[in-house]
Amino acid sequence: MANFYLSLFLFFALFLGHGVVELQASHHVYRNLQTSQSTSPNQPYRTGYHFQPPKNWINDPNGVMIYKGIYHLFYQYNPKGAVWGNIVWAHSTSKDLINWIPHDPAIYPSQQSDINGCWSGSATILPGEKPAIFYTGIDPHNRQVQNLAVPKNLSDPYLREWVKSPKNPLMAPDAMNQINTSSFRDPTTAWLGPDKRWRVIIGSKINRKGLAILYRSKDFVHWIKAKHPLHSVKGTGMWECPDFFPVSTYGLNGLDTSDMGPNTKHVLKVSLDDTKHEYYTVGTYSTAKDRYVPDEGSVESDSGLRFDYGKYYASKTFFDGAKNRRVLWGWVNESSSVNDDVKKGWAGIQAIPRKLWLDKSGKHLVQWPVVEIEKLRVNQVQVPSKLLKGGSVIEVTGVTAAQADVEISFDVSDFKKAEKLDPGWTNPQLLCSQKGASVKGALGPFGLLALASKDLKEYTAVFFRIFKGEDNKFVVLMCSDQSRSSLNSDNDKTTYGAFLNVDPVYEKLSLRSLIDHSIVESFGVGGKACITARVYPTLAIDDYAHLYAFNNGTENVKINGLSAWSMKKAQLY
Image (tube, rainbow, N blue to C red; front, side):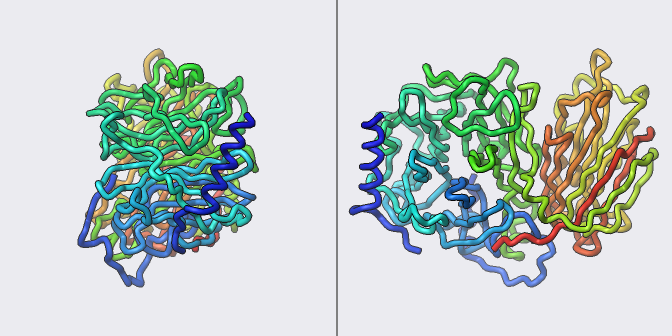
């Protein structure tokens, strides 16, 4: 142990002394647009409380962490235009995960090992509260390699200056390891094993087999590739932005990434480059074998469990030791055309950070917006318990419907007329697209119409349907239907869906939606399933947006309670 801490001392002495390189204060390429700027004054789709910079393209959240009481968000950013390109690590800090202060870019091309790009990565807090960042660089040969950067001044809680290791790259493809040079990226937060060696995984592929390449190190500088990956799955393609972390089998508290104690399971999440969907599994990590084994019955494809079943990608978690929680970040891309993005001068936002924990069943995760978001709530409107008759629509008035937080709970007492679930209906997204909000059922669709125009020519519907499955058990489908979200036909109006692990006979069906001009972020039954949508109404804009509760089923349902709040603007830059 003494040797370990000595090596850490020498590591920081080297990096923060002589020989450092200082930083001066899924990738579609549109070379003709990478430096385009827009001056459009009309901005109805900019968000009021979801993170985004003033202009230009953003994608993956990177290096998320808390240091000296300050939260840090780094993210992929094009400083010159509204499409992907010229990528640097932009940097903002916050005391509450909601209001943000921008800083100069933290990491950008300046070494041979990253001269063609500084791509995604993660932060690790080393012993002694010393942050370190691993990130993927693109070298002069366009190889993807792994680099290390550390703060120049550890006494600065805002970590405004970073220095790169003179030994970069620390991990790279070569003739001996046979790593795919164009598919080796996005290192995770590292964890410390019982043998006092650090581990990190990097996403990769061999042909169509996705894999999490495992490296080990005694000193965080010299890394040795393991003979086997942490995990791999055939037929899944390139694994981007992997995330690997422990979760407690009881309670809602999070665990440090290096926690290997009892009552612990592990989660492996990967972002699939081929489909632009993510999936995760819950399983067991063998520290002796350095292998991860998903629980029996896990689906290892994008038909499996997801953090979010809508527009959500390149997610990243971190352990917030100040509040003993694991916090999830995710990138929400646009659903508008590239031409529209260029006209408005920006593209991409970050979802509201979510607290994440293991469901009491042990089979899946649960997510909920961080509690700090509730500080933005004002002017609460409450609708008392009332019957929502089949075919009815009720407007929720008194809130700024374009920028709101709404929670509603439904109770169903009579299940006799529930529609029978066809055994072939196994794809929830397809089922939601076939049975959208306008398709009348028996028990459902019922839920919310967000960002709706007064004449209902435009709306984004988030709703439930209840089916009778095998063995007379009931199945709950949650949908986010964007098919009528905008009269602009250039937008992607994909409908999303998920089956919920809930028994509606014994549990109320609750829904929470965060509505913010061009995003509807929804949480079903306390966060057992989440669906995020990007929408661009042409009528339901600002003061012309409306919010409704609706029931397009033949059977009545009961609203147990509805609370809605107008949301104040957050400080985003």
